Length: 392
Image (cartoon, rainbow, N blue to C red; front, side):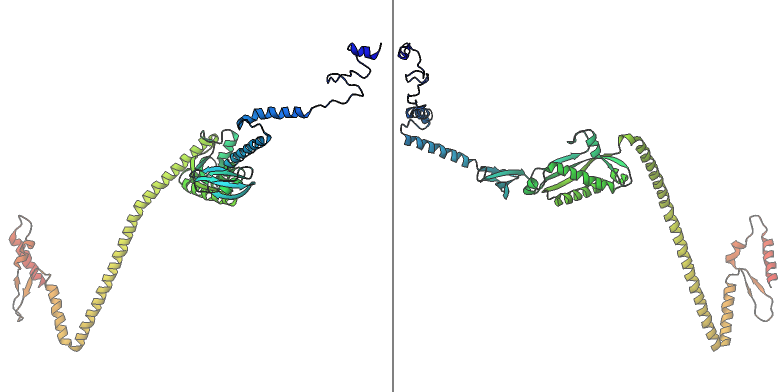
């Protein structure tokens, strides 16, 4: 059978069909068929222009298509530049970074602008808000419960006692740059510094001070120590206050601790009673001793003064006696007799010529000389006369 007959009947020759059918294989002498012609590319461009050209109006020419692409680029550039605006709220600090490097910090509130990402970025930090860190095993603690909370709250005192300490720390951001870039985790760092500072202060205090009247001093010392440590780290954190919430012995030893506390309370009570008794007795004894000392000093002064007066009087009498012995002797005799006679109850008078002595009864002394009621008056007078005779 001839090849032409087979070709006319729709058969194939040895090199395939001679018709330019792209779905059928070609012969070796047939020219190659192009895969895509220029007209196909034009059709693709027209289809793309028909889809996207409606955004800027139907522009049939290629020059107008280029203008549309330029407008798209301008709009994208404007949108990118518009992302550079930022706002600083009151109480915030804005930290500007250029390619990740710190450039400046803005503290004034208001609207600002920076070169959009990826050239510049802005991070804002609230420096006015007081942050709170609560440490301990209480139900309101943000540390949670379990072994970590118990271990963080149990501390050793200076007199080797264990106490559960729950406290809270109020702090704020003082430097936004240091807060963002000097420490990796500021909240965790503040917590660890607070635990370390409190353990150091508790370790230097007795349990009685921790439980009773030393809490204010512990809070102040912990705050100072925390601030010192955070400043050494350049953390940019300012500690506002440290407050002890509760300080108690561990539950395992609470009964024994209560017994010790009761014994100490009894000891303090007995001591106070003894001091009260001492305060009542000592002032009285000291007052009596002082009175005795003052009386002795007064007696001493009076005795010395009297002795000096007697010595001075004796000296003056002696001087007068040396000057006029007879006159002095007479004066001394008269003074002596006056001292003796003025204390007597009767006076004996004589004319000095040996006459009988006439008794003289002082009337003023009669009531004292009267005997008891019912006694004989005459016998009393006789007794007085006999007494007078005897004295003669």
